[in-house]
Image (tube, rainbow over all chains, first blue to last red; front, side, top):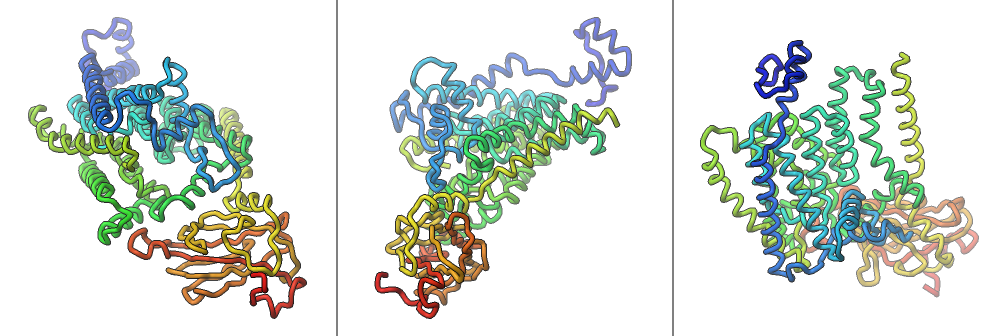
Length: 413
Length: 181
């Protein structure tokens, strides 16, 4: 039903638009507007309910380790908060843990929420930011899927995402949820032909996670497709501006580093120095070698791989393998984006065994693929909800334990 | 063609910007060299413990009296002045695994094998190095997996360093430690 000719103009289309629709171009224009509906009130309430459920799970589990409203911001979140509070610093000793090893998207978001909300409890402000970004992701699933696959797929996708195994990272000031938000809204913008928005979102996402290079690639391909696959037509100013938007945020950040610290690659260098000195040998590898090391480590019963890491890594690998196996159920772009993320991780030495699960589970397309795969077979929706319950129960259990570990200062990701 | 002019202009500006950014990069070894530049000059022809404050390092961890590295890249930088032929000797405690390569001032690379254990490796230094600071780089092409009991001894362990120039001592004596070592 995607072709314009297949659309009948509904009765509630305003008269002016109805008159325009008498021409072929008008029909296409109206059809594209009809095709891209927005979620209704029930969908919004569903997203709100899921966000509240994820928040409640987080807060309850947190209260089992530390007092509920205690202002605790830990691990990477502490670095992001430090940047948000005091800005970037560099001590000239590259071997020290420098806060410039962290990209600026999460600190910028935290700084914004600290400025907007009253009070001094940074945990609550970061928690609020997490709840908003989670809602944005869930709402984005509806914007993305309800027209092309259906609301059932959107609901199931939102369900497996909001109650996923590492949902805690939404609320603790990490950058991954913002990257996931960027991924989902970049996909939404591409599907709805908002190319300017897609360029901007992909460009800004580059300030969150290096994997956003995949978003940049997909937007670039879409711009080229719009140029009818003729590369020289990219020189048209509108196309060139869209491509420039993809690079602009990262280049602005690199320029700032060059001016402030005389090294445009300081983020890369300080990260490399950090891992050279502090990280184990399993950090920052191409994906397949990382998985190989993980499996060898499991086989050798390595002391550096705790039971928790083995369990979490295995669950993440199983989810990734399942999503890749079922990816034909998802729309083409979402499916290929998921594959492209793994290709990126295989090619670039950025995969970190210590953050194995976080890095794979915050690649948003896995939940889109699972949601679409669950929605595809015919049958009543409640049966599918029932079928997914064991997975959700395991996910919630892992998430609860992860939250308790996190607030006991034990490594999670 | 004229319709493409603004786009071409934008492209040229972006490429120019990117080129400027590429020119503003530093390497990791440059940071270590800068750090070494602020330290005292190493005494000539004397063995100096590897953990001495006169040395700037990256990618090493201390274990007992030696420093070891199992990283893809480790850098050791120091300040020293001398005349050609000008060498640095490293006291190697142990080498585990393959593909360990050591070089100084981006000169000739020497592979290290387990035969170097409890021995020394000599590398030529460049006399025209910037501000008399020199860098020794240890590179391991394919570090081994992080498991098993030998994790601590993957790569290479070094315990001392000595810098000598031709005018400082007879070249025959360079390999033997001085009484002060």
